Image (cartoon, rainbow, N blue to C red; front, side):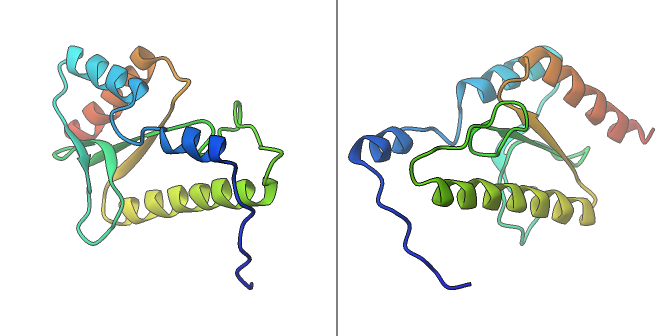
Length: 143
C-alpha cells in the first residue's frame, strides 16, 4: 500500500492532542494507589522483556505480569471509542494500528512467559486493582 500523506490537523486539534498525557495519567495513578493499598509492590513504566520495545505502565517482575492502562479513544474501546469525523481515515488507521500493536505486544509477552493485563480507562480503579491482584496472586502461587 502506498503511503498517503494524512490531512493536516487544525492548530486547535494539534494543541489538544499534544497535551494528552501518555504517562502518569489520573487513571494510572488511581490504579497504582489501589494496588499499593492492596499490599502490592510493583515497578512503573518498564519494558518487561528485553528486546521488546514496549513499555508497560505497571510491572510485577516476580509474577511476570505487565499491566497496560489503555485509553478508550486511543486504543478503540469497544464500549466508548468514538470515530472522529474530521480526518476520519487517518484516525481509523491510527487507532486500528494501536490495536494491532497491543495484540502483538500481548503475544510477544506471552511467548516470553508474561501475562499482559489490559485495563480500560473507564474501569473503576478498585475493581481493576482487584482483578490485577488476583492474577498476580495466581501467578505467584502457580495456581
